[in-house]
Amino acid sequence: MADALIALVLLPPAIVVALALAYLLMLYARQQSLVFRPRAESTGREPAGLGIPCHDVFLECAGGVRVHGWWIAGRLPATVVYFHGSDGNLSYELPTLRFLCQLGAAVLLVDYPGYGRSGGRCSERHCYQAGEAAWAFVHGIQQVPARDVILYGQSLGTAVATYLAATRECGGLVFQSGFTSVPALASHLFPQVPTPLFWLLARTRMNSLRRIPNCRCPVLVLHSPADEHIPVAHARLLYSRAAGPKRLVELHGVHSSGDWRRDERVLAAWQELIGRETGAWERRPVTTPLAPTPSASGSA
Image 1: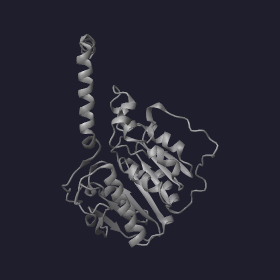
Image 2 (image 1 turned 90 degrees about the horizontal axis):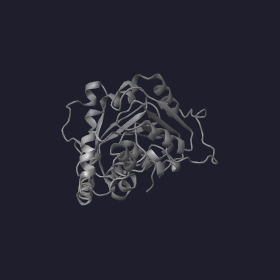
Image 3 (image 1 turned 120 degrees about the horizontal axis):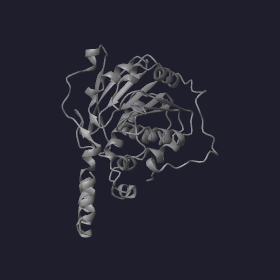
Image 4 (image 1 turned 60 degrees about the vertical axis):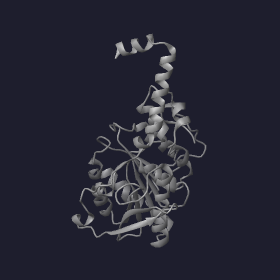
């Protein structure tokens, strides 16, 4: 590594600049594929295999693209709308679906455009359109009151859930293993590139940090300090910006670990959220200053 750095220093400045520009252009060209990793193929597993009665639904987005979802009725008034991470599709989410079904709430899981059986191609805007279509199905077609809708995002899905929670009344936001923004996360993954360049070049921003102060619902933040993909600093900063009521539960295990599904603290927090028993959750006083954190901040 040291030899490579010495060789780079000895190169003529023009070549160094050219290499840096080429590297930035590569990141710019690949950013969509780095953020979105859809899989069209199914694992072959379905909710029925777990004994979960499920209805396939196809929801039309604003651009005319139809996205695939699973709708499971519940015994409680609450409905959880779940947005998964950047990799895979609905068929990879059966363990999470089983956890949600034990809570007693109705559940809607939705794929993004380009994922699974959904049409179109994925982008930040198209993810938000899929979220809007999910909201229209639950609140409009199923006529679930807004206060009974809990928006739940995992990893990439946290940006979609936060986008919806910031723009409408809802019963709660669950932000699991998510990031403050794509440029802030990129600056962690590629520390050799100055952070302002990511904000300048980013076509995908998904800036939940800017949106979270507009969320006037209870916020449950779940994140593991051992997460190897997204630093827990992102969760802590976002939590500090949420007005509350709010709760932060630090998980165990790596980013893809399923240990959280057996964590009694997680189950208790979910039950409090669904039961509207968040009176003891923390609230941030309006006068509390927002302390910036260089490693996970940004705007726009």
